[in-house]
Image (cartoon, rainbow, N blue to C red; front, side, top):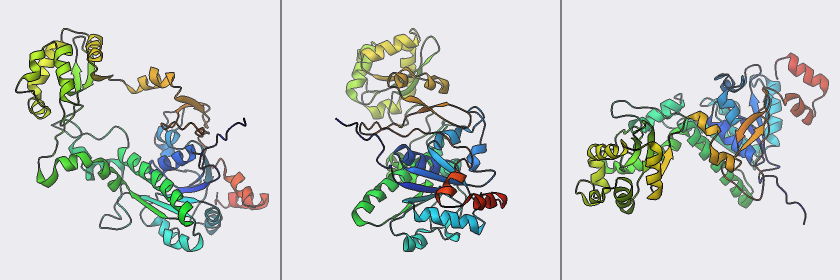
Length: 398
């Protein structure tokens, strides 16, 4: 039998991206994971400003390493006509254009879907913004924390006394995910219609979708879920509990069958299952202070490992409260060989494989590019002579 083609389903497709920060780079990195050629256009000298967020990954920025592997970096000063000409040639050969520039910037350069569709009918154009292409908030600056605030995320995250942002760029990640799936949908649609589509994603709308549960919980003006730190806002017991050795165990109950097992096997107080204060999730949640005291009274005489043993015996969901460093050594991730090496300007780095395992192809795991690393090669590919390339370098076009 011949060796099956292990290249991803987007192999042969070209994506041009005018991107910075997280939302668009996260989207296009996932397209690269599936085999697409992704050409990242960056400003000469400085590049994507996320390159300078920190220097924690052997001198490279953590955000940049995470979202930019398997891409080619081309530097272009798009204020110069010669750079715009290069970009135009690339777009003419591309399948997808992605941008998350400042509001209106792409349109001013003639890169709106309406302008491009006339010349390149099969091109898919994806615009990622904070608030969308129209509406009263169109021109507002949008950063992840600001969108977390606007979308009501901060109203349900934190403690009763103080809100807290998510520890990762959740609004950017949401927008990047919907842009990624939107582009895949547009590629499928192009296979049917033969024409490209306009994919438009806003961070606000992406994160608002993720707020669906609290929005419906507060439907018709009802009381919204409160901030409950690491505990679940509406299901109890579901969250962190301290054991006698001062370690924290995370556990979660989902139904009444599990509540009965929890009382019998874990707390060893089967009579609590029928206690009127706790005999339904709504009442357990209303009386969580009293129930927490009972649980932690039992746990006080046990180590965390003993608590986990009882939870496992009762088949109650539980988890360790890991630190970030623990994730690099997580036994489950290593048992499933989820880490692999990728190249970078700082040498070989460890990277997580994409979460979706598809047995018919291998995810692309190529290096994180240095700024402008591929500029000369791309220009040669476009037919520029060595003399022309040297002039573009001398003029600061690349």
